[in-house]
Amino acid sequence: MNAAEQAKDFRIASKIAAVVNLFKTEFPDLRSDLKPWTDDVETREMLDPDSIDISFHFPGYSFRCHCRSILIQIRFHAVDADVRAIGLEAAGFSGLGCLWRLSTVERWHFVGRKEPVPEMQEKLKSCCREAIDIFNRDLDVCDETA
Image 1 (cartoon, helix red, strand yellow):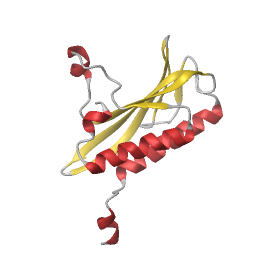
Image 2: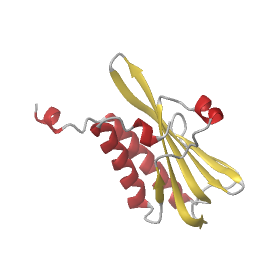
Image 3: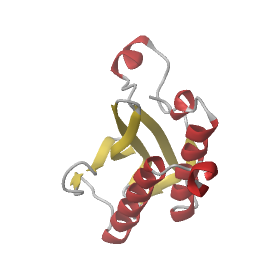
Image 4: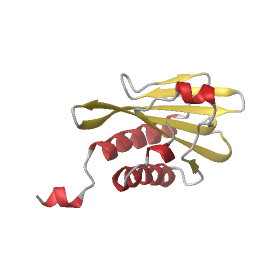
């Protein structure tokens, strides 16, 4: 689901902003998009309400990441009142469609026609780890001092 629609309170909005800043720190040329999905009937039927989706766009084609855009989908699972990030899916796109995918759910391997160079793979994996950590730690200062 679009990140802009999931930012329902200050805590979630702060975590979304932290993830955007994390990716922009590693990849300064990126432009973020908190509404990567179009608002039409077909798209709404496919949206996962237990995810936060953000896309990032390079100013042109990135030969090191082998894509023009990166879509990340942070997936959540709720047990009772506790909602946890359980993984992150990332995909690199160009005008030719999806070129690669990365899932943190199992093996953390890139798959696809054109994978990022090894250095960029490590940067992307690091961003994914930190993004999951951001959503799984409580950013509430009051709780940290209790």
